[in-house]
Amino acid sequence: MLNNLFNNLKKKSLIERFLLIITVLVFSAYFILGLMVIFWKTFPFSMQMQYRVALGVVLIAYSIIRFFRVYNANKE
Image 1 (cartoon, rainbow, N blue to C red):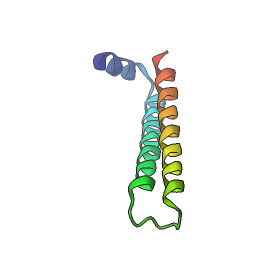
Image 2: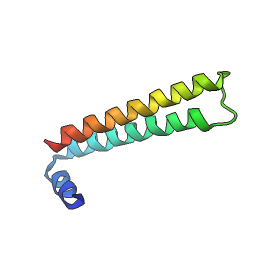
Image 3: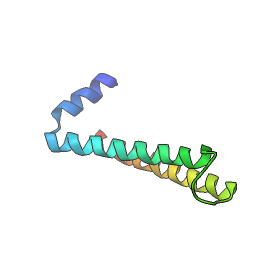
Image 4: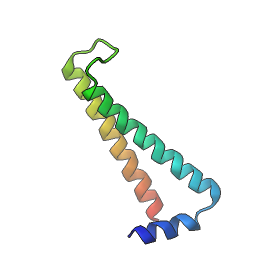
């Protein structure tokens, strides 16, 4: 599976590889931001914990949706 992924990556043009890397970075940023919102003890904005958890879950869910959209687009 990993070998197949590398072969598909080699077939892509330079701009497609660059855009794939950017989308992976954006996915990672949303995921890490969601975790930071949930687990950061001294959060700089005054929000109740339940709203922080809700915002964090929404960010993590959005990052997972983006991941599967990119994964399915690169599968074809």
